Amino acid sequence: MKIAVEGCCHGELDKIYETIAYLEQKEGIKVDLLLCCGDFQAVRNEGDMKCMAIPPKYRSIQTFYKYYSGEKKAPFLTIFIGGNHEASNHLQELPYGGWVAPNIYYLGYAGVVRYKGIRIGGASGIFKSYDFRKGHFEYPPYNPESLRTVYHIRNIDVFKLKQIQMPMDIFMSHDWPQGIYHYGDTETLLKKKKFLRQEVEFNTLGSPAAEELLSHLQPNYWFSAHLHVKFAAVMQHPVKGNSPPRVTKFLSLDKCLPHRDFLQIVDIPDRPGSSEDGLEYDPEWLAILKATNSLQSTSRQLWNYPENNGLHEKWDFRVSEDDMMQVVEDLGGKLSIPNNFSPTLPAYDPANPQPHMSPSYIINPQTTELCATLGLTDIYALVGQGRGEVGQSFGDSRGEEDEAHGVESGDEPSEYPTDTSALSGSFNPDEITLEDEWEEDEEEVKNSKDFTKPPASGGIHTPNRLILPEPKSLTSPGGTSDLMNLPPPSHSTPAPIHSQPQNESLDDSNNEDTSAVRVLKRSSDEGVNPRKCGTTPLIKRRNQDIYTTVDDLDEN
Image 1 (cartoon, one colour):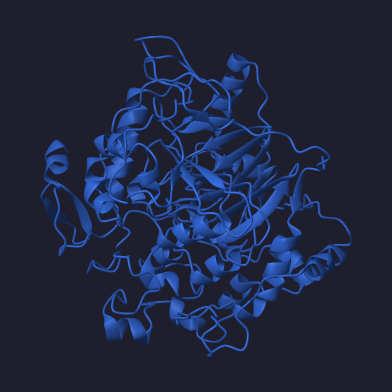
Image 2: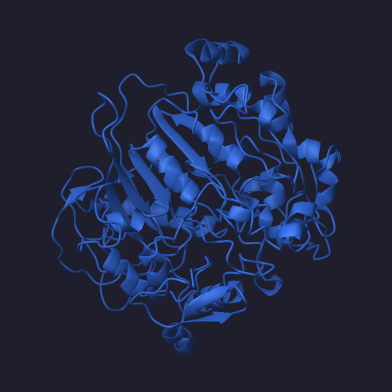
């Protein structure tokens, strides 16, 4: 099976599908599935644009609305997770996942599905410690704070994923698992992204929640995006009991722009005897959703998931075979996900723009149907009804505990002692120089709008094989990394070809290689520990919570 993996989509569906069509023609292949690792931007109309954490002057309708309205149809099944630049009101309609357009499926806050025998899971959003233990309290119209907290991953969703016992083939997250950069070519990464050096040396870059999931799930492949750079790594996990050692092949990709490494074709062996019915529900995952339904929260109050510490009557929510058989029975013996997409809002009309359209709050019939079938709670419907404590999501939506401990609840204890994201005193710690990011996009698109035309310096080279470094064990030194070979880019307009040693491949085949693309200058969205020292460049503060090196600032 040939799977196309894409980094940050940024609403550029037309360009992504056109690039894949070009690759199919050039390489003589047929792509079966597209996986998108966040910042998908499923924007239906002008109201949805106001629900994205993007500076207003850079908001653009892009091309998703064409697939939502039926003007176009995705040429192959597309599965995606959410990132930190999304039409959040649209995605919140589908907390357990669902179709956002024909042939385009969202995995939900967290989710697992099966496609032709391949088990695919994912977690949406990015990690921030001060929101991690809260419920999903946000709903439109968002205020400046909830516009960003809405895409922060919550511990309830991580807890559900930690109940999984069966093997995982592919997992997706938007931000990287913390520490994964020590299992690939770290020095080359830091040459491309100089401002990440301090966080890498202190091991604070990335999501500690994703790191925990990586250790628990140990999938064959883990795909991410967010940092706008192509990076590959191979992690060998410690042996558990009598089980054979497992290896995870990690790949992060860039955003969809010309001359960038935003796309990779991965070859995964077919599963003999697997269903050909298309996308299917995963029985274990649905059984976990049923088992943990009572733990759902739409409150801002901090919550710790149950543990075996004498304080909880039940802490183990792993499911049995009988639980999974009950799910199959609930579904009438049919695991195929129904093609029950229906538009919930009018689509953007270029001939009749509505710039003053307000964000909409809509209950999605797909979620209603799934909840009725399995006995789940539609938490988006619940929060909109104003039940319990959810009324705090309007106005200044900080809870009392936040005010008592500062803007970000930075003094609240975290289950992740290495997390430093609460060190900043800024109101908006996710302000990752958004204007700089979109200004860069604007400049790149202005300079080159053709995704399939080769650069003047040479021909097109788009290998569909991925070279990976040799695996590193979890016992490897955390602060150092030998030089490793990065994978070749697979996009429409690559840089000139360079030779490179051939190492382990995602599909265990011989591979070709091309050079890396130019470095994207962007400030980090994570805090750094000012009390630690190292051989890093001088750091100075910008906009309270934005950190970047002096050299990078001077270049801007």
